[in-house]
Length: 569
Image (cartoon, rainbow, N blue to C red; front, top):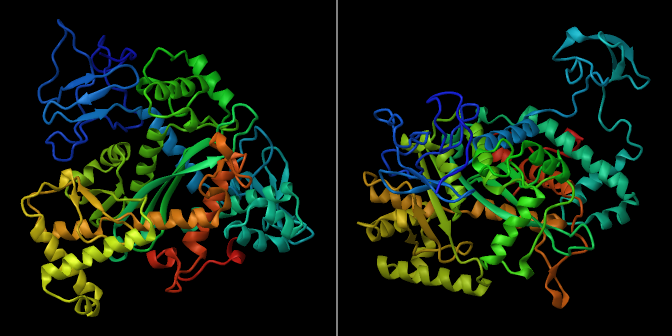
């Protein structure tokens, strides 16, 4: 079984490609098994039928198999498989997130459409402007040298008629009130509240573009463990038919020690409509080309998404009660593309550090492949450890307490200490005792296949850890420490706070006997979801102190104090 690809215009002339083309120097299609000698090595990229030239000496060959849209590379050295991914789509999605997070939307510039100075601020490009006095409020005015149009600068809230409500609406938005209650309490219209959300979103993007500089963080001192997981967010069905919800993934990576959310990505792009995505796909005429080889494969089109759901339904992977649909405004990004772009953005943030990395993630094969592809140089150099964590999420509070109690009992039996003596031991010495017991238990075990951790915490009962980068040369005490520190607690804690404090993110309710998912406080506009999620991430990172009176940004070293609303509004 092969894939339909385009004839190469470079390299081996006349040969058909069997793996997708690199894009902007990025190629993620190789063996992703960190224990393999060919991990991270780009394989031969061309089909070589009988009579054609053989692959150059030293080039990894292997086989590319699988039906259309499901092709995979089979490593000849370890027999591990790696699904082929579209490099162009990954880089395009990565760039979209980079621009969103690093550009300042509040920078003023010439407003004339088509003017060469449009998008060039007076402070970065003074050659395009003349100073043109001040407004009645004392704000500076500028005149464009090219088109002679004028504009002014000043505080973004200077034209708000009810600017006294800005702090109140921001706090209510981040503390569990739905939009309907905010409108009732503030006596503001929905239109004004939507305008405030746009305002907060722009101000926050401006603040983080100027202040969020991870090159100033010493990750050796602050810690270099990170946890990555995703949660499903629900939007109400936008029309009377079909009455099925819209589901999108919210993918986050948290700094384990501080709780700072390093990167957050939502599986939605508001910059283009579903109709535009469909039109681009039709004009490209790529229906017969496998997804990995297309020029346009970043977002779902309606035709492809419906075919995908039909396939899942036929394979009994979902039922009619689990049916969901595409958003009617904006586009749904392919989740595997989002995972790779997310990992690349995280690597941007950590690019300047030499600290040893510990990357902990949920048991999602796509997520594992995204991180192994992105952090391949660090993994090969032995500077990055990758661990996968799973645990029993369906347990009640009493059941969790029982699991923790059993672990304490087992630890007492192994060490000969009484429960009272264990309670008196300081936390750092207690961790050493636990590591010593685990180190003895894992002797001779292959941790890549998984290890049932015997001393579970209440937040992760029956924790099971796969240490995918298990190195036989590493000491068992070091491995035991990694198993203890492999936790998703930091990111799961954020997800819990997000669902509790952002009303639309609460878990879906079930409407009557029809089993339809619907909630009166859920959003109908997916774009609002993206903006509110980013607003709350900023609130969590910079504004909300914990029990230690510090915000995550303060613990990480990005801020010296709490950020108040007056600092960015």
